[in-house]
Image (cartoon, rainbow over all chains, first blue to last red; front, top):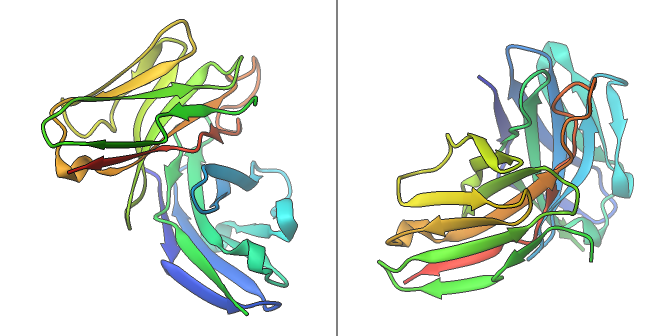
Length: 114
Length: 120
């Protein structure tokens, strides 16, 4: 069975500082991994996804994530936080060779301090 | 617009009443998903449609919940005899059918804005 753990339900960083949102997954087979962002009162939007090509994946809005099989991690980073990055971020995993049901983590709310 | 739409955006109902939530997927998307987002609980998978059939209903929390999809397009999620614990945001997503020869799982899901259900 697959699962996703996001460490920290709330993360606060200062504007201009590094953003690091942690995600660890559990999967018995090679996974696909995703990060989604949800801005206030909006639906989820795909930030980036890992599908077994490059382990360092670049997404929208300057975010990137690195797939580390040895650590079963897929942490999301951004070098310099912007006020507009304040949102909730969800890590998700799905099975490569089965249906497209995605398992989501509980989410991390990112707060940007001025 | 061309995105996933959901209606109503907000629904307030009394305990014990039935509610219907609607999802209009992106045109041409054959896969459709329903999720529930409760405060502090993340996203909970409810049901998945491929065309009009639902190969995975494993996430429906009780027999008060049902969903249907007609014409391979619009889907309706129905909650009967609503309870206060049903209060949540219900999200719908759609994606393209798995292309022939492609590996499953990499089709992006496009989400609607959700329906916020409040049961008093």
